[in-house]
Length: 199
Image (cartoon, rainbow, N blue to C red):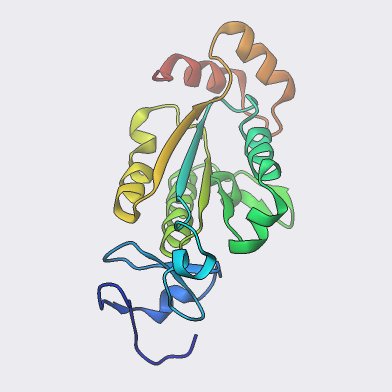
């Protein structure tokens, strides 16, 4: 999009072209009236594709390291049809783990967990501002307060929320996760997370 002023055809709100940069879905959500607009014509998506504007959904995964959250996230993405993924480039997986990826390798930095979660929250905020249809948060989310920033963003941008708990938190579960988790989380950390997990 060029830098000239753009206005929502439904409510007249001036649209920030800065929000059109970066992630490029096929539609943009007006921050005022929440109508989904085609990025090229600025017509409501429902008028462009002859159907209701797509429902926007935030899927929050929660579970201990090694429980299979990332596998579930991949299954959700793979389960979307090619048409769904290509029409609006509609899905993204956001994880605090992404912060620690260097040249394709996971390099954990003790003391930077807070920054990692802030980076994840910013990624979700940016993706919602750009109108992506399905956003998956792939974090442990052991405590309910860990999910609060994402729930607040969902309310701000008009996203439906689904929370999916993956795996259990019993002793047998912890043993299983220790054997298969890929980030080398120590036993004492896994056991503490299991004790602190809020249903």
